[in-house]
Amino acid sequence: MDDSVLIEERIGHVSVLALNRPAAMNAIDPELGAALSDAWDRLQRDDETWVIVLTGTGDRAFSAGADLKTPVPERSFAGAFLGGTGPRPVTVPPNYLKPVICAVNGLAYGAGLELLLSTDIQIATPEARFCLPEAKVGSIPGAGGTQRIAHALPRGIARRMALTGEPIDADTALRLGLVSELVARQSLRERALEIAERICANAPLAVRAIKKAVEAADQLTLDDGLAMEQLLWGSLRDSEDRLEGRTAFAEKRTPVYRAR
Image (cartoon, rainbow, N blue to C red; front, side, top):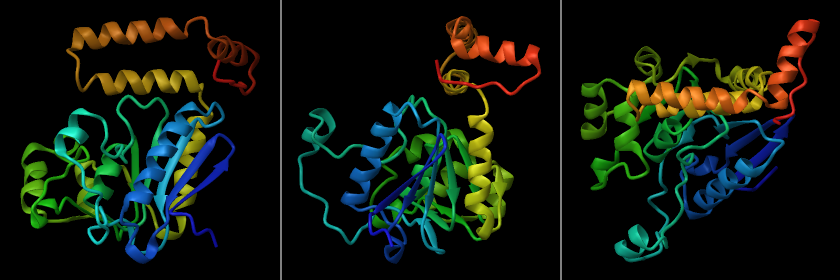
């Protein structure tokens, strides 16, 4: 059995990351946080990784959040905030090029929910629960939770979750659009890989351009977003993959994309 805190597996052009501290409900301690940060950096540079699936081991939790039982190394706030000496974020970095699918196999609390919110596509088991409980322990969601929850959910619901620390169940998460699909536990990994393979069947440079354009829509005016869309479209015009896609369509065959 793999005793790594983060298990990594490659299946074709899909890299699967599994949080692996099931006895601690996959709570994120400094070791797991560092492993996640390293993985995001490495997979971003890996030409053979086109899509990433993120999930957890065990049958109780995707992640119960930060491990409050593990001491956090002391450091000055100024050093961490202004000097770059603090830990790197465990969530998917902003402007990440490659799509990340989150397969939630149980509780997604605190940093676990913040991880989910930083991904592109979210599916979950019917047993999953979602919560931002930081206020209950005198803190705030500090890994992007206050910002991303406000984009992901209606205003009143987002504020209620953050201010009360109350959880929502999987059916509510599906109704609100926090996840796009509920899948039986035994089929969760298979379904996540199926979605990943569907994305991998598309031209990877086009997928990354679409991801950038869609993410920009949250921050730009419509006019600026349309201008960016045209620039991204133009950047793909002479790519090998676009030419391959058009040729394969004309020849009625499956295209062979190379991310070039």
